[in-house]
Amino acid sequence: MRGFLGRIPEPTLAGHVTLTFLVVGLPMAVSLRNNPLLLAVCALLATLVASFFVTWLASGRLTIERRLPVRVMAGEPFEVRVRVTNRSRWCPAFGIGFRDALQIDSSGEVTCGPILPMLAPRATVELTYTKRIHRRGIYNVSNALVASRFPLGVFEHRALLSHPSRIIVLPPIGRLKRPATRQLASRPADHARRLTVQEGQDEFHSLREYRLGENPRLIHWRTSARTQTLVRRVMKDSRSENLVILLDTALAQRAESRHLEAAISCAATLLVHAQKRGCKATVLFRGGRAAHPGTRSGLFGALETLASIGADDRPVAPLLRQVRDEGAAQVVCLAVGSSRDELQRSASQMRLKLLVWDVLEERFGEIFQR
Image 1 (cartoon, rainbow, N blue to C red):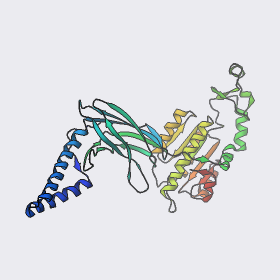
Image 2: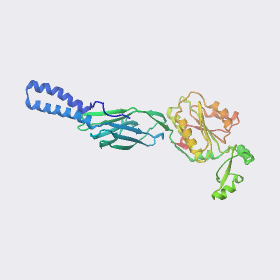
Image 3: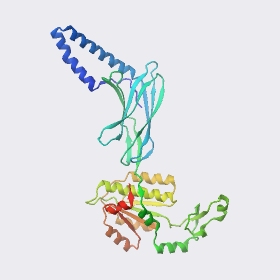
Image 4: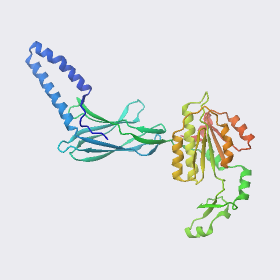
């Protein structure tokens, strides 16, 4: 929050031009004893002085509060709410404009928010305008400017909102194309046989809606009759639908930051894909992990972890040892700086079924679209 009172209006570009004309014209009019020119200069000077005080007084005693959402998607528009209160008892505020560096266009110019024509004394108004942030990350935002150029535009009365706000920009969610969903739907035959033998022998965990193709022995008939919907039991140790994503954050010689961003966006999309199916999903990367149990609240926690990932120079192959502990039916590696052949060789040595999507290859566009 910040009020305007106490800040001195500053001249704009038009104000600087006018002041320069006065500095040159006033001595010239006095030296030439030209009464019409002196009268014009004095009138202009009086107008500037009056404009200075009107700009100062007409801005009022404003209190501004900005509200940002907790989390947004990168590149997606979101609403910024600004609450403005005029604490003056008698003086209205005129021509209040907002400039916010949350959104920067392709030319690098800071875009502007709405303009508030007038705010009566003791009045409060809430404005809403749309912004967007194109890069994922966690931002502490404090760069907002509120200004008034009323009445002539030669002076600007402004205040910088220095009250910081924290906003989390999640990675953009793309679209998995048909080849990707087909690869994710398949699973190793030995893993499927092992689960067929073990299903129904594990400890009961929860209930969820039955999907076509699942073992009908797991249907909970009593709950299904009550809800008029097929419901199946979920066993605690059932891992038939768990998904593990190995995220390679090492940039090779040919890799660029845009390739890493594409890999992180694909990992976020896979997390969303698993959550919609009610499955667990885990992203393993050098320095940490992001996981959710198949719930929407857990999904946002995992996406927030992906929002703060940076580039790393360490290979992803050593993380294959952690995959065994996850016990997933599908393991997808998003390779950026690692070789596909090297990853497949390491996975074969561990007798691990690994699906490698190389972000640097052109075929990656046939699998995933941002």
